[in-house]
Image (cartoon, rainbow, N blue to C red; front, side, top):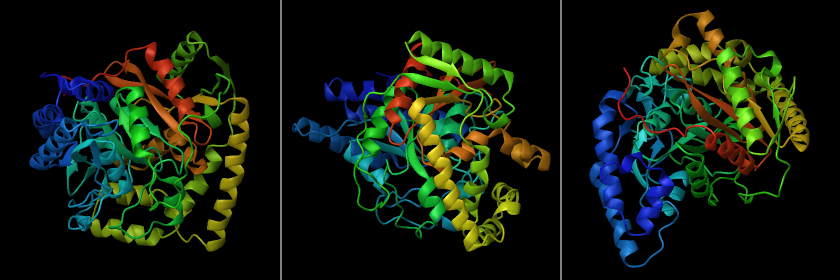
Amino acid sequence: MSDIWRLPASRVADLIRQRKLSATEAAQAALARLEAVNPKLNAVVDYRPDQVLRRAGAIDAALARGEEQGALAGVPVTVKVNIDQAGFATTNGVTLQNDLIAAADSPVVDNLQKAGAVIVGRTNTPAFSYRWFTSNKLHGATLNPRNAALTPGGSSGGAASSVAAGIGHIAHGTDIAGSIRFPAYACGVHGLRPTLGRIAAWNAALPERAIGGQIMAVSGPIARTVHDLRLGLASMAAPDARDPWWCPAPLVGPDAPRTVALCLRPDGLDTQPEIVTALLDAAERLRDAGWTVDEVDALPPIQDAIESQVTLWMGDGYDAMVRAAEREGDAGAITALAGKAGIARDITASALSAALVKRATITRQWQMFLERYPVVLLPVCAELPFVDNLDLQGPAAYARVWQAQLTMIGLPLTGLPALTVSTGMVGNSPVGVQLVAGRFREDLCLAAGEAIEARGVPPMPVVDLVN
């Protein structure tokens, strides 16, 4: 089967479980695809074929002995270079961490491997995972396989690029301000930002994160089908005592009304016509599937959440972040931090406390709104995916990017789950929509996402890369 790399993760897992395909064959196909397209994309920046094949061979041997190997047994996946994988450098796209070799696996890597997945490589990220564009001095730039002129997104740009190009069937990403949702959007695939506490994460190779990172950054799956997101989520969400934020919440909650609030311009967002069209189309797909969709003029605060989000994310240790970016000499990281100096510099303890208080207020408003509308449909971004490195083209361009990403930045403050669903292409540009639900109700996001996906064309891997 020379086209194994094109298949959904669920199909690969079924074939391996039925002994119609071996884990070794799936790994060989993934490696062959990686070697065919990655030299152009630079999505995967660290991989060891011998180790990949040994892992696949061990799974085949265990299956031959009749041993259960998990829901992802033999499925090739990728993980991001900002999480610990034993024996690999946790670089986070930074030369300063090139020799930071992890002694143990992070909970995410552990859980993927307990589910039987085969990690075929580690994917690229911007320096310090700060940008919605993916390049750095250590690993270089990653390209978007659907259109090389566009950003692949960031910070999980390598993850989304790899899945879109057929390198692996599920990719791990992280998201503190859109780093799963926006790359999925930019590369024309699906990406799930889970609820805070759903997926255990921790890097023993790095210092403990400041409070902003602890309560807003999450790990999650990127894939070409919503069903594969389900598989990735279930596998990554297994218990791990190393993350004190992890919660034993069920993956499926109680029945809820199939009622959706559609908001085209949350908080006055200047949503471009192509995005409005995609949202209205997604709403019609949901109605066709039996959902009730009400268009609303306003949502709970998003814009007001941004200052608290930046205060918590960058304000606790901002000067140290700037010094590290300057030592690294990465223009993207320096620009990202400089753009928020007005909020983040000289943050006091009382300001951090006030941001945490405001977080509770805004989260309460969202939770009460979601009692009436269990799912919200809104833009991923106000624009189609940006031209690559637009944020480096001067202050006006940086401000444009930041303003368009309102939903990417503000929603993580609440800890709520959010899903990017790819809905097609506008010319040579991917387009999609975003779904939000209540805490630990990823199942509602995924159910709505499947309804939208089923009435469109599910994202397929890019066969011939677009220049």
